[in-house]
Length: 512
Image 1 (spheres, helix red, strand yellow):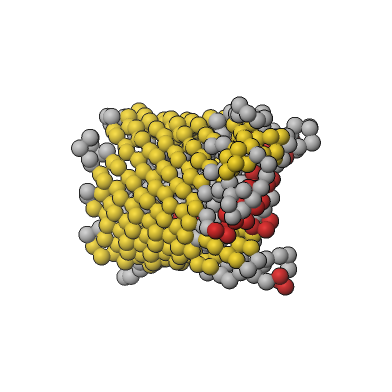
Image 2 (cartoon, rainbow, N blue to C red):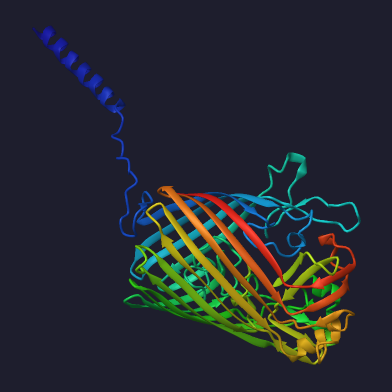
C-alpha cells in the first residue's frame, strides 16, 4: 500500500511538472491590432494616423495634356522661339504630370494645427533653339522653369522635373510657408479656364513664401495681413534705360535689369466676404523696388528705393438663373510700380512676336512692362491696369463650358518715352530709326477663350481650351532690325505691327 501511494504521488508530481512546462511554452496573448480609423472631424477622406490623434488625407491627380501652337504648357506663343513662328517653333508641346498632396490636422487647445504639402512630378516636351550660326539648332532644352536638360544618352528617361507648390503650417490663425498669396482671388489664374497665362490680375498658383495672420469674424467674413516673398514671383524688373538698344527692345527688353538684393517682403492686406450667394474680396499690396547700381560697381551710385503698390477687387456670383452651379467670376486690378500683380509671373510682361507683312520681310510686335525704369539721376514707376473674368455654364451633370477673357494695359512716364522714343516720338533709342513713324512703349494685351469639359465619371475630366491673345503695341512704320539669334531671324526690314497668338490645350485629368 505504501508503494502504491508513492507511485501515485510521483505520477501526480510528474504531471504537474509537465503541465507547468507546457504552460510556460504557450505564447503571450498578442496586443490587439490598431486599425486605421476614419476621422470625420475635417470632412471626407481623412483618417487617424495609427497611435496618434492626428488626421491625414492624401490626394492628387494625374494629368496628360498637349498644347497646340505653343512651346509652353500652358502659355501663349510668345518670345523665343515660340513667338518666331518659324521652323524653331513647336506645333505642339506635351506634358504628363502627377500631383501629390498631404494634408494633416490635429485638434489642440489653440485650435487646429494643420500642415499641407503639394508637389508635382512632370515630364514636358523640350524645344529646339537656334544658334544663329546657320547650323539650325543647338539641341533639346527644357521649356519649363526648374526642369532639367534632357539627357539624350538615355532617351530622356531620366529627365523631368519636381515642383514644390505648397508647403505650409497653419496654427492659431497664422500661415507660415509656401501658399497662395493672400492678394490673389480664390480662383488665382483661372476664373473659368485652364490656360496659365491670363493677364489682368495676380496669380501665385504655385504658392509664395509668406507669414500671414488671418482673422475670422464669422458669417464668412475674414481679413488677412501678410508678409510675402518678393524675389521669386513679383520682380517684373528695374530697368536701366541706358542699356537699351534697338535689338534688345525688339527682343522684349527695354534696358539692363538691375534688381538689387532683397530688402523687404511684399506687404499684403485682404478682406473677404464668402457666403452662399458668392464672394467679394478687396486686396492691397506694397512692393519695394530696390535697385542695385547705375553701373558695374558701387562707386557709380544708385537710385533710392521706390515703393510700388497694387489694389484689386474680385467678385464671384454663384447659382445664377441660367442654371444650377453656373458661376460668374470677375476681378480688376491697378498697379503702380508692382507690375506682377497684373501681368502675373506665368503670363510674363515681355513680348516678342513675329508675323507676316505685305511691305517688309516680316512684321514684329514687341513690348515690355517692368516695375520701374531709371537712368542716372532719374527714376519712375510703370503703371498698369487690367481685368479678367469668366462665365461658366453647366449643360448637364457631365458637360460644362466657360467663356473667359482678360485685358491689361501698361503705361510709361516721360522718362521712358523720352529715352526710348524722343520728346516728340521721333528720336531716342528707337524712335530715331529710319522708317519709324510712331514710337510709344505703352501697350495692351487682350485675351479671349472658350473651354469645354466632359466628366463621364466622377473625378475624370477631358477638356479642350482654345485661346486667342492679341498684342496691341504702339509702334508704327518699318525699321532695319537685327533680332536675337535664338529666333533665327535675319537682319532685314521689319514692319512694326500688332501680333496674335492662337493656342489650343487638350487635357485629360484623373483626380484622386
